[in-house]
Image (tube, rainbow, N blue to C red):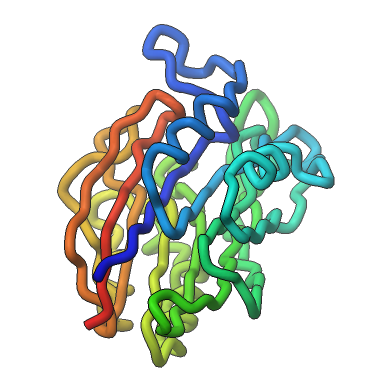
Length: 255
């Protein structure tokens, strides 16, 4: 007996247009239709909301509230990362949707790297990132659901190998997991950075690391990682024009 999970960086509801990849036209209906068609028991979302210059965060979060209202039969949690006045205006915020009741919600801030970079003619500093988690019961078994979105160091002239605090914090959390657990998210790991190997040493393997999940560069950024109490039954990268990312969908059973 299996249950289905999906992880999706939804780029704050901004669909992909090859001719205009930085088009900011939001289409949450397309996001909703895509998610509803997957039949997932658990949905992990990254970049749920739009980021703004100056670090403004709209509360209540409008995109999350829209999805929460429209995705019937799901319990859900959401969190913003800590605000950053030099924020790049990209997507931010994490959500988990589950057909089973979520409980023991936790939010862990992941430290920002101490470096500067330039974007749109202004000096910027990286933002703190976020790990959220919640427990639930699936098929009578307790399971921990974790969701994250790490810094894309390859976009700002550095690597997570040089600035490993975020991934180190994730590894520490993974080592605390005693029962079934899934870590989902956009790990923003460029080839050679060793993030998956590090998490593998903590007992978590990725469902797939072969098929590209990002349209802008040929990288596998999006992952569903699981530990030994779970068995991977199937996995697929699901192409979509609802974002510049594809989704990763995996079916699991309890080992």
